[in-house]
Length: 298
Image (tube, rainbow, N blue to C red; front, side):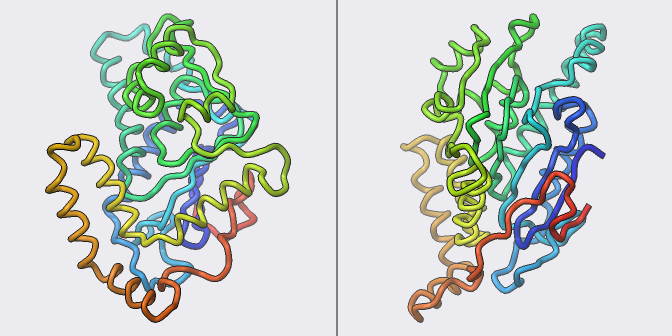
C-alpha cells in the first residue's frame, strides 16, 4: 500500500510512500487517507495515564496525541494523479462529481480530524498537494518547498481545495495564484500563511526535522483532550462569528474545566509538578523513509 502508519510514542506518523508517481493523489491514496483520518474520530480519547507507548497505531484503541503527515522523496505531492484525471475527463458529469466529492471528503477528514495534524513539507506541492497541506493544522516546511495551483494550465480549476486554501491565504491571494498558476516559493508561502514554520537548510539545528520535532514537542505538552476541544473551538467560533459564538465558547471552557484531564493538570500545577502526560525526554522524531528505524505499526 502507498501509505504507512508508524506509532512513535504518542504520535502517529502517516507516510505517503509513493515517490514513483511523486506521491500523487490517486484513488487508492485518497481512499486510504480518508479511512485513516475518519477512523481516528471513532477511537477512545487518550487517557492522561496511558503511558508513553499507547495503542495508537494501525487498528489501535486510542486516538494519538498528535499526527505527523509526511511523504517520501524530493516532491511532497504532485497533486491529483494525471492518468486518472485523463480517464475521468472521458467519463460523464456524474462520475466526475462523485470523484471530486471523494477527494473533497478526504481533505475534510484531515481538516476535521479531532487530533492536531502537523505536515512536513520537504519539497514541491502542486494542486491537490497544496490542498492536503492546507487541510493540516500546522505546516512545517523546508527551504525546498514550493507551491503552485497549476489547474488552470491544464484547463481545470482548483475546485475542492479552494475553501481550505482561501481559509489560509485569503481570497485576494488565492485569486492571484489560482488565475496565474505562478509558483509560490517557501519564503512567500510563509508570509501568505500557507506555511506556519519555515526551516533553514541542512540537517542541524533549525533544519526541517529539528523544527518539526520542536513543534510536536510543543503539542505533546498540551492535554490530548484539550487539543481536540481547541480544534472544535476554532471551527465553531469561525463558523458562528463573534456575535453568535459567545455561548459556544462558554460551554467549551466549562466542558474542558470539568474533565479529568484538566483536574489532573491543575492538581499538578499546584503541586509544582508537570502535567501527568508530559514526558522528560523530547519526542523521538519521525521514522525514516524505510520506516524501519522506529518502533511502529504497518
